[in-house]
Each structure stands twice: as structure tokens, then as C-alpha cells.
Amino acid sequence: MRFHARLISTLVAVTLLAACKRSDQSASTLRDDFGNAIHVPATPPSRIVSLNPATTETFFALGAGRRLIGRTHFDLWPDSARLVPDLGNGINPNVEAILGARPDLVVLYASEDNRAAAARLIASGINTVSLKNDHIADFARTTMLLGAILHDTARAATVRDSVERTLRSVAVKTRGVNKPTVFWHIWDAPLITVGSGSFMDELVNIAGATNAYRDIHGPSGEITLEDVAKRNPDFILAGPIGAHAIESDPRWKIVRAARDGRILVVDTTLVARPAVRLGEAAVSLARLIHPDAMK
Image (tube, one colour):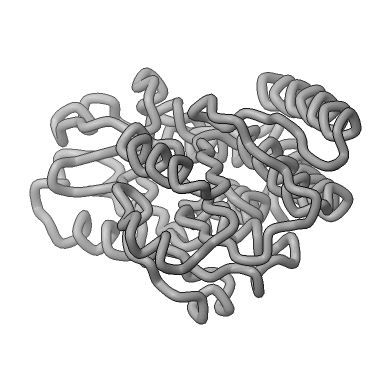
């Protein structure tokens, strides 16, 4: 129910966005997640720097991949993204390298670490948009915003609707299943897991399970191995590298799920991006956790 409520609130926000856009066809005053005004020019941007893997994937889905002139080290999907010049990190980016690319639009992740870079780019006259992509609803919101900037809200709505249909389909298939608890292994030293402030927690819920660390209210949090053992999750979710580390480290034997071999290996290139493959990510998790329900 909370998931559907978020979808409804997103649709309301999209309606308001469309109304705002209609009120001024040449330039709309929208706000990004730093509260800065976003200029929607009379013609779509043609030289875009996207320093966020999620927005890079979205630009390609919106048919604007050829307009990208800069990305981060981690923007590797689709394969065409690898042909876009690598401008370094998405956090504390190299502002000089960005300016040297002569973009007419820069999209940043709205981390506090990027606030200074955003201010410098805006002061240099660059249309700069800083966006949070922490929740599933953020995908719908940012996709429609980028669609407005590209003057193609129809295509943006098609992309958004396709993802939301898949998410709803998975939620329906897993609605009546028993919901095991899962511990999602993100990092090993220190040991980090997913909190309820992340889209990954939402994917776990849609896939028919419960995050053992929902009481961490941020996107992630540092924990101890002893506490994982105490919470006694039914399954462990981990990427291929993390799964190997758990299986080969005898200290993990204090966790019953690790001792019993109940480690589910996730595709980290698929489940770690709150972007156009969110539906596929939910399907992949549900197939791991509830293979019978997903037949």
C-alpha cells in the first residue's frame, strides 16, 4: 500500500510539473533538489554532462544518449555509455574538466559533497540540475523532469510507465507469499548494509521479503557481524564478490544463513541503480527469493 501511495503522489507531482511547463513554453522555473532554479530553454540541450549513473541511463532511455559529452567512471550501461568521455567522479567532480567540455546542461547527484560544484557551475552560466535518486518515486519524478528539459515528456512518460507496470506486476505476484527476512551485504570493511532510506529496501519489499535492517532510516548504515548473527536473517543478499568473501571467511559461520549456504547472489550492475532497469531489478530479486511465485 505504501508503494502504491508513493506512485499516486508521484503522478500528482508530474501533473503539477506539466501545468508549470504549460504556463511558460519558452522557459519554466522548476527547482532541483538543492532548491536551485532550473532553466528549460526554448531548444533542448545538445551538450549534456551527466555525472550520475542513474540519470545517464535515463538519458539513453529518452533517446538523448548521443547528446552526452561527459559521464562518470561508473556509467557503464547501456554499452553505448562507454563511448561517452569519462570526466571522473560524480562526487566532488572536477569542475574544470566539466567546463572544458563546454556543456549546455550538467546533471549532478544532489549530495552535499556536490553543492559547491553545483554553485560554481551555475556561477559560470551553466544550466545545472542536481537530483536525488534515493527512492523508487525519485525515478519517476526525475525522468519526467529530464523529459521536460529535453522537450519530450511523452517519451519520458512512456519510460516511467513501463518501469512502474513491471514493479506493480512483481508486487502482485509476491503479495500473498511468506516474507523472509534478508540481510543485504553492501560492503565488508566496514560492514555496511541497506537501510529503509534506499530504493534497494523498497525493491526487497516489492520482491516479497523484509529488510532485516529497516530500522536504519538512511540509505545505508555500518553494522557488526555479531548483530547480523543476532538478527538471524533467513537469507543473505550479496554481489558475486561479497558472496565469495562471506563463503570464504570463517567468521561468517556465526550467521546461520551463511552457515547454511543461504546466500543469494544478486546482479550488482542491475540492482544498484535507481533508473530504467528498476523493474528488471525487482524481477531478478523476486526470482531469487520466491522462484515459484515468479514462474
